[in-house]
Image (tube, rainbow, N blue to C red; front, side, top):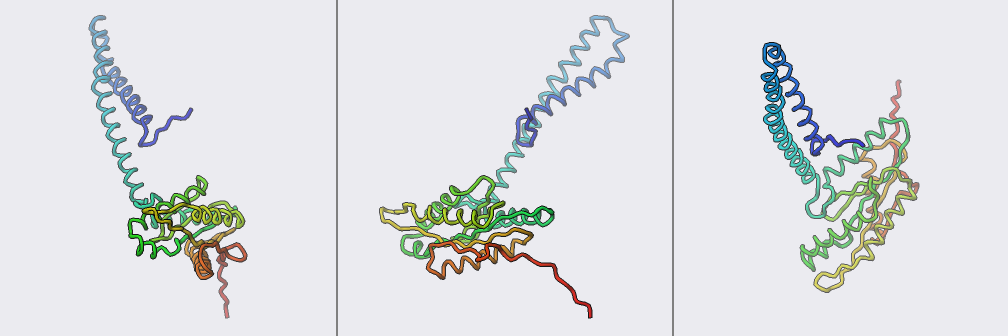
Length: 262
């Protein structure tokens, strides 16, 4: 059984308190041991009890309080980090956090010799401005929340989803091939299309257009985002409420530049 020693865990508090208190007791016994030969048996016993109980009461209490406060600070810092990375309306990642995580994955992929695959989806709510204009921004916000929930419901644990624009969401699917990524995109589209959105009892069908690009080799975030964005434009131009992927199923892979010497 592995003990959690992270800054936010009770295991760290208990471990440091126990180890620190034991150290204080050991130091007290070591320092006082030089006096033991000159003391009576009763005095030695009293000194040993003092060496044990004093560090236990003072040192243990101090260390526990200190580590407890450090744990509280670590939890607060973690919560602030989550808040800073999360879109407050939809509870998915914000644009900055989403792009940072995807860039980190792609950077690691470029460093490794083993080929990795994946895909990026850009999901745009169709006719969202009309929802805001006709039903109000509160209804528009509710629609975005429902869309975000529908997207998350179709994803795996390791997939990344973020709100990257007003009515745009990004989904990064690591380790999938083109056919798998298309199926995920289509399941998202169908799920949103089937949702019941009736603000004030007035049915308002929701739909999304999805542009996707997959990769099977080194690529940058800008390149795969541009490829998916072009496909999103195609989906919207062809009538919306559909998925569009690169015909070849892969985003363009950068080729090393060749310098010609004349």
